[in-house]
Length: 349
Image (cartoon, rainbow, N blue to C red; front, side):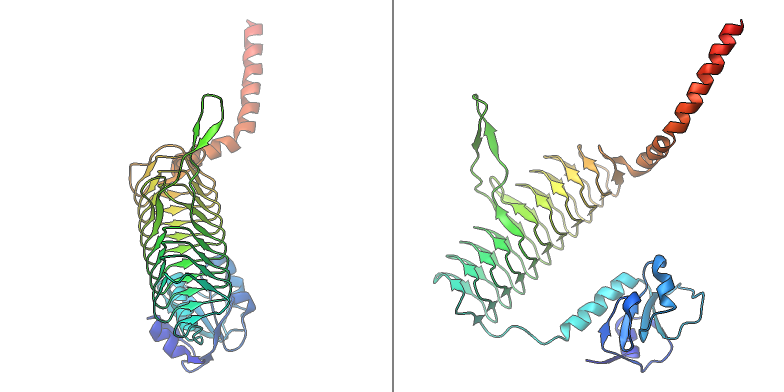
């Protein structure tokens, strides 16, 4: 597939500078550009590559000011990352379709009671359990597991090795990446008088909304009773642990290796950095931004705050404390000098 630069510009509602008829057939990283490719410059630290990039077209922000002459066509847009997402989606939609009407491999196991929608693809070594429902245009990749009584909506991707456990409900346009586990038992154990722990049965389910994406190796525990819920548009990175009965609000994003303990409720439009941790039974307000490696030990009631640290606190306050901590060795020396001077003054009296 080849696309003219002017057509890409119109798709992205941008402004073109250069040859409108130059042809593009693929996207490429700015440092790996080649003729016929389109690259992008979103982060200023990569600007140096713009002057050596061999791509035919470069996607830049509208306020980008080149420090050297550029021998390629520019497309200026308001938001480079949003435009890139739209561009990659466009190129992805031009790829040949991989699904056909009810393409179910002979090497897959589908229970006779399962309901399979139209245009579903089920690859080899997939397991679909009893009374499960697979919505139209869904693709179950090789070695995916779908337990009993699962409901999967339309246009979903359950990738290789992913496990959708008993009773889980998935909305439409959901992507589950390899080896993610949806609906495993929550970590529930009751301490006994003799010091041992007795398992608490986990009888609830996981309910994922529409347009949810779950990264590779991420685990979302079923509720003890009721539901663990991820609302529409939630995006989870790889290797995240979600405890039982947690709730994540609409359009919240969580980066890799974060851990959320049971019954914590995270609001909508939150942004949570990598390796952040939450104790259980918290309420996190809408729009909260949690910096990487933060430890959240109490509820956040005020919306749209940025917090950092362990325990987490207001971001500005945390930065001030960090500056003071960096200066502690110098402050210690100054205090020691002042103590010596004070000692000398006392002795001189």
